[in-house]
Image 1 (cartoon, rainbow, N blue to C red):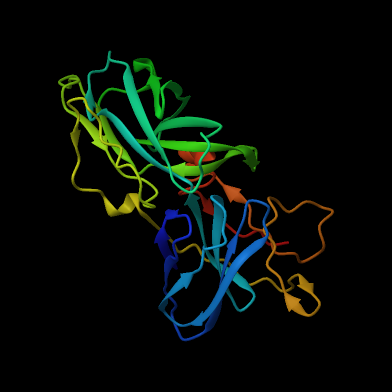
Image 2: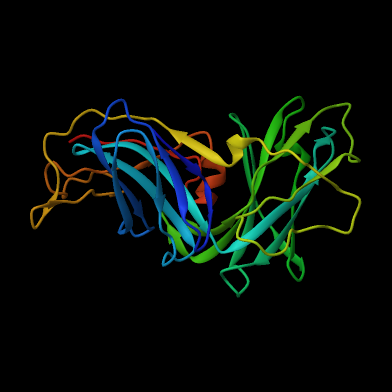
Length: 289
C-alpha cells in the first residue's frame, strides 16, 4: 500500500508512505501523463520515501509501487502549478441552485489556466460544470438544483486545467481540496463555507471579502489516498536492454507484445472529479494477458 497527498506542491519533495508485509525490495515510480518515468526511488519493507519533484513540471502524474515484477499499488497525484480555494454553501434547499466560487493563485505557473472546472459528486451522482471567469483570478460555476437530490451529501472540488489531455481529459495543473455540500429541505444559503485549501505551494490564501466563513478543519481523507489494490503475478514482463520497465498503457490491445504489463484507469468513486482531476481518487488495476 502507498499513501501520499493527492496534491503535491511544485518543486517540493513528495513524501510517500510505503507499507509492505515483509522486507522485500521495491521501486516507487512517478509516471507522467505520457506514461514515462520521470522519477524513481528504491527501498525495502515499510518505510517513508521521498520523491524529488524539483525538476517535475506541474501536471497529472501516477505513483506506482513495483514489487517483484508486479504493480502492488497505484495512486494518481497532481503536482500543482496553482493554489485553488473553493467557496460554496455547505447546506442548500432542494430548489436552490448552488453557486461555487473558485479563487486561483498562480504559483509555479504564471499564466492563467486554460480552463477551470467544478465537480460535485457522491457515490450515485456526478455533476461537472465549467467555471466562468468573473474577475481576475475569480471563477464561478452554477450547479442547477435539479442535478442534485434532496437528503444527499456531496463533495465539491475545483480543478485548474491545462491545454494538454490525459486519457481524453484536460490535464490537471491545480486542484482544490474538498468542500462538503448537503441538500436538505431545512437548508439555507447562509452557512456558506470557504474551503481555503490548495496545492500547498504558498501564495495567496484565497481569502474572500464576503461573509463566507472559513472551515478550520479538513478531513485528512481529502489530502491522502490509500491504495492497496493488489494484483496476481504476471508470468512475463517487458524488458529493455535487460532492465525491467513497467508499462502503463491505457488498455491491453491485441497488438501489444505478449505478456506486457498494463495498468488501465477504471472508474472509481472519484471518477467524477477526476476525469477532470485526471485521476485523483481513480483506482487503477492490472490487466493480465
